[in-house]
Figure 1 (cartoon, one colour):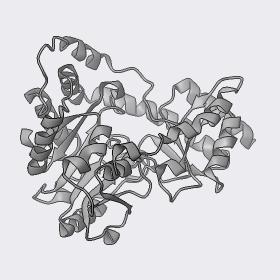
Figure 2 (cartoon, one colour):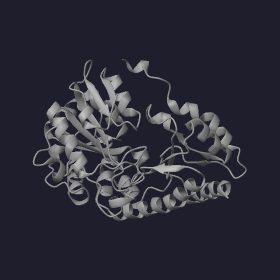
Figure 3 (cartoon, one colour):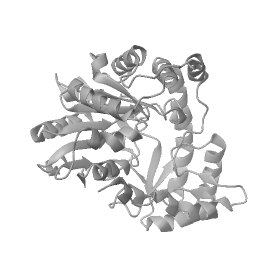
Figure 4 (cartoon, one colour):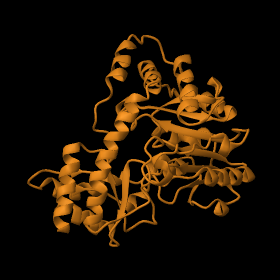
Length: 370
C-alpha cells in the first residue's frame, strides 16, 4: 500500500467523548494520550540553550558526545556492556523509527512484520507503508516462516506487559531460526511497578542474559520522551547490531533524518543524569497509586499494567460504552480498539496527567463506587 492509503487518524473518533467530558463542572480529566505534562528538567533545558549556536548541519550518525552517552547509559542503566559508537544511532523521536524501520530495512511484498497483539498502532502502519504484511502475535511459535521483522514492546503500550529475560531469550532464538530482525521497543523500561519489576531492572533484548554473546539482528529502541519529559524535543535512539545500524545510517543519510544538533547535546546531558529520572518515576508512581485503586473501585479490572505509563482496564463491556460512562464523569480514556482487534472491551488510562487532575479523576471514580 502507499502512504496515501492510510486510514484517517483514529483519535478523531474520540472527539464526541472529549466534548462530553469537557462539560463536567470541574473540567475534563484527560487520561487519554500519554503526552508528558511535567516540566522538562532545568539541566536539560540549560543544555539545549548552550548548544543553540548550531550553524552547521547536524550529523545523521550523531555526535561523538551523544553516541558515547548512549553507550554509557546502556551499560549503567540497562545492563548492556560493550556497546561501541558503531552500535548506536540517535533518531528523531522513536515513532519515526517505528514507522520507517520496515522501509529502511528494505522489506516489502511477501514479507511479514510481527508485532504485539495489544499494540501501539504504528507497528502495523510501518509494515503496511513498506508493503509488508503485519501479523499480531505474542507467541514465537506462531511466527510464520516469512517473518523478516519482529517487534516486541516491553514494557508494553497499552497493556504494561514486561517480557522476562527467559521470554525474551525464547523470542530471540525463534527470530534467529527465521533469520528475522528482532526490534524491542523499550521506551518505558525505567517505569516498573508491580511484581519483580518494582525492584528489578526490566530486561533489554541486548542484555547478555538474552542475546548471549552476539547482538546480530537485534535492536533496542528507546525514547527520552517519558522519563525526561522530552516529547517536544523528539529525542530517541536505537542500538544493537552494528551491521543493521550501519544500514539504517546509510538510508537515513539519504532521507535527511538528522536530529537537530542542540537536541543531540541535550540528549547527552539527559542520559548522564539519573537523578531527574528517579524524580519523575516517583511522580508517576504517586499518580498511579491514586488512579489504580479508584478505577478498580469503580468497577473496572486492571489487567497487566505491571510497568509503563498506562492502566489497561476493562469492565467487561464494549469499550465505547466504557468511554461514554467515563465521559459522564468528565474523564477521557483511550478505547482498546485503537490497539488491535483483540481488545474491544478495554480502555487505556494514562498517568501523564497533573497531580491535581489525577486527584480529581480519583475522587470522581470513587464517588460512583460509594
